[in-house]
Image 1 (cartoon, rainbow, N blue to C red):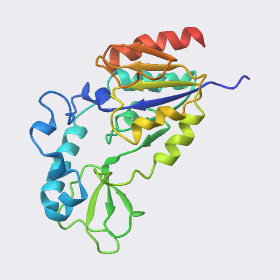
Image 2: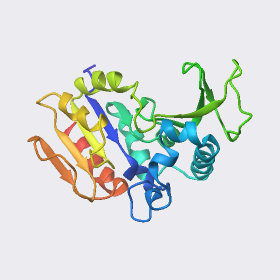
Image 3: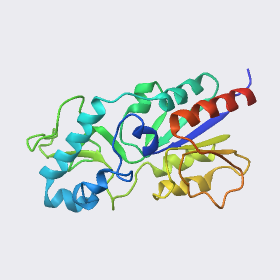
Amino acid sequence: MPKRKKIVVLSGAGISAESGLRTFREMGGLWEEYDVMEVASPQAWERDPELVTKFYNERRKQLINSQPNDGHLILHQLEEHFDVEIITQNVDDLHERAGSTKVLHLHGELRKARSTVDPSLVYELEDWELTPDSKCEKGSRLRPHIVWFGEEVPAISKAVEIVCKADILIIVGTSMNVYPAAGLIDYAPSSCPIYIIDPNEVNMSSFGNRNFIRKKASIGMKELYQILISNS
């Protein structure tokens, strides 16, 4: 049996926006309602943990009431034909709920919390909210399991390893402006075709093996699915 080609997916907020999740950057997005440094930074947590906790509780409630869209579902369907690994900047679990089996979260996970004294202690939140009384087993307060602005991205090394093995690279729903995630494309093999799905301009001018599908994620993924299956 021939070895299946490896598809690596870099996904961003654009794919989740179609499921109704508010993003920071979109028109009318969270940046217009919140100063990002007031809710998504270590300094914010030190200054006002109640506000930060409330912000992520609200995001979690919204996520629980959201469903994967066709973009998520098609990525799962590709697993029938390819070895698919997803590296996502999104903190939601819509890829997993769509059925994708290999998902690496660069910026943390909304439905998890972790200890403020021991980062290895990570807890599933399910449907419950964080409160000032939410503590880890060592008695320390729990914080959202999110990589905030100014913090290191622990999963970036693993992401580099994955991208280095790509036969096909798909970039969907991300402008490729946020680092270090944006730098991952530098590690794709030179022979690797790159498909970029986004209705907006994407920061990809220096790469030659590019194929743009200027459509939103759900529509663009349907188009790309047919291309990939016909070429497999």
